[in-house]
Image (cartoon, rainbow, N blue to C red; front, side):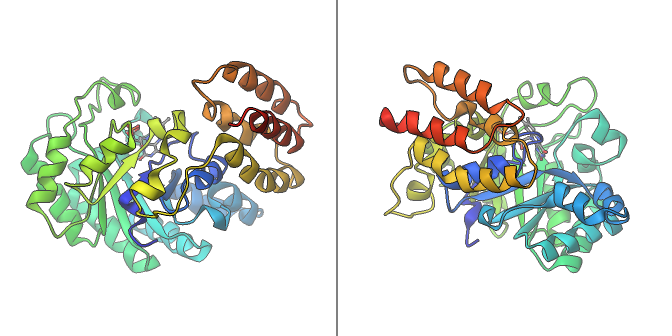
Length: 334
Ligand SMILES: Cc1cc2nc3c(=O)[nH]c(=O)nc-3n(C[C@H](O)[C@H](O)[C@H](O)COP(=O)(O)O)c2cc1C
């Protein structure tokens, strides 16, 4: 866990599920991974159902090989968040993260996500309750501002207040969010990136651990930002181009003996996971859907993807589909 946050893979709903995290673990053994956002209230309710354990397993279960791993929570109620954070510690997570960056309407209706940037004191109370309940690092992922509350002074005030509540790291998506008018996807592209504000935040608060997120496309760009901040977090460019990050352990985590993995090695690494998943009644497609970006920019990639998609989509598909796909890559030295 030591400074795993120097490079992390951003929480992404529908993307960073346990299967994608196992995939990413084949590529970087050292980076910090996040779950998708899990709403604290959903955890609270799941625990009280007769089949609570199975529900929790679906919501927050993971394979120890995914560690270091942070559970991202959504919510605004210190009591529910504390309950979820305590459970995260019991289940073996390394960190708990509070989502103060999501602008979706559904999340706003629940009065959490990015709209909490307008309530720094409430966020501080949530963080304090979570930290007291779990003993794990509690971190916050947030924006640089929302709507008209987007001055640097307001950002500083937010961070100072939440730091006083005991937050141990700030992952700053370097864009403001427009809560009224833009949907989540637009809120990830339209408001301009202000990396400079995150750099400034670190300069002004050198004692805080500050991580920069938003628009990072290459390891080289990450290394440049790491001269100014403590960590970098990458979302879409990791999901869409996983192998682009094959040198992260060597170049960012300083693991100099680490050779970059190939696509076939990644696939081979996934096979034990796929066997366990299918044996437990899961569909292979849940894993294979994340593999479509593994091979890109080489002749025949489309054909390989098409065949994998067809075969892994069959209801009875099992890990043999992945073995055959890995063999095809190996035959081509990929
Ligand atoms: C499909 C998708 C789902 C996302 N889900 C979450 C989420 O559950 N929690 C969260 O804090 N951010 C979520 N985000 C935002 C990302 O974590 C990240 O802040 C954003 O994509 C900017 O980083 P990037 O430019 O490297 O992608 C999501 C982004 C995408 C593209």
